[in-house]
Length: 100
Image (cartoon, rainbow, N blue to C red):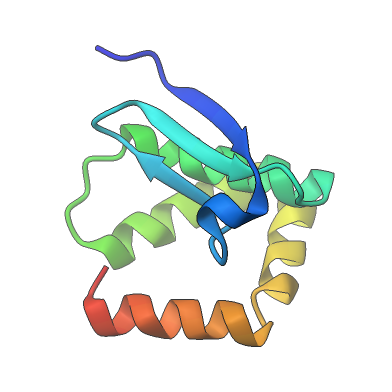
């Protein structure tokens, strides 16, 4: 079993996402340019994804966000505000259309 790792990366690597988790590899990427409270929330959120076995992507996001929000409420609030940016809203719309 892989030991979960968090890799901090440049914004350009995963933009417009704040983080990406790859459970099979046991690695998550978090943008290093994010403010500290946001980075801590995103890291916690992605770390949750690394161990989650839920199949439906919406349920995975709800669980990971709730878990991380409980531990990092200020970061969660900041993520909500940052997610109102047009590029983030377009990103979410694209994920909804793809069903991922």
